[in-house]
Length: 250
Image (cartoon, rainbow, N blue to C red; front, side):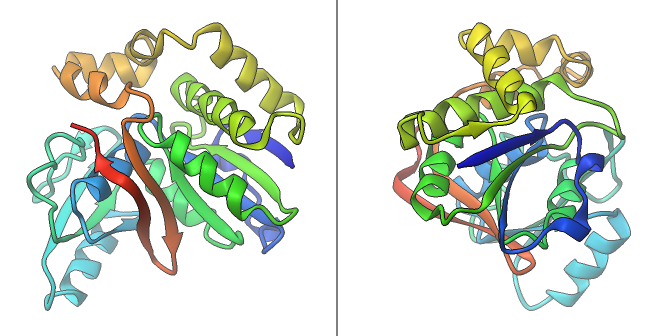
């Protein structure tokens, strides 16, 4: 199983995506964490949008169903949208379709859409996603895509990719993995900091911004590993999930 890590979504070449590629997207702060959590909280599905205008158009076309609009633009709230924090959305999404727009995470997911399968992973659910990737593997290349931030590398996504690799090694027996140098680097970084997830998240640029906005509780929540047993993936234009045992271990 060949696994490569892309350090930011801008490195992903859409022209090379086809059924021979499986993509796993990481935007730990916060899009993929929010998506994983909201589906475990009972959201029917998540629709990733690239702009607020697109999200509003999607909502207008779905007037016959219950929807929730959430999003941010360059980290700032969008008028009429819930700020996309997982715990803030916990009691807003049950039975609804969440229409989500973020500056980086939802853009990365949409950019990956031509791959054979697109998984959405966070620290919260990487164990379950790794299990599903291993079970469904059919000799494709696995691309772990760190969303990054406006064409910049984000340490928290790299850490998330490393954690995913640690779980994938367990599920495959390790010897089956053929890691590129970027994947080896992510794995080594995670192994050196495996017990420091909250500290890592707090001390990134995005993490510091969230701390300044008094979102420490949200950071603590998304720093937890394998709390949620949902394998989240893109199906047509929606993100849905396979759930195992209990969706959310409260």
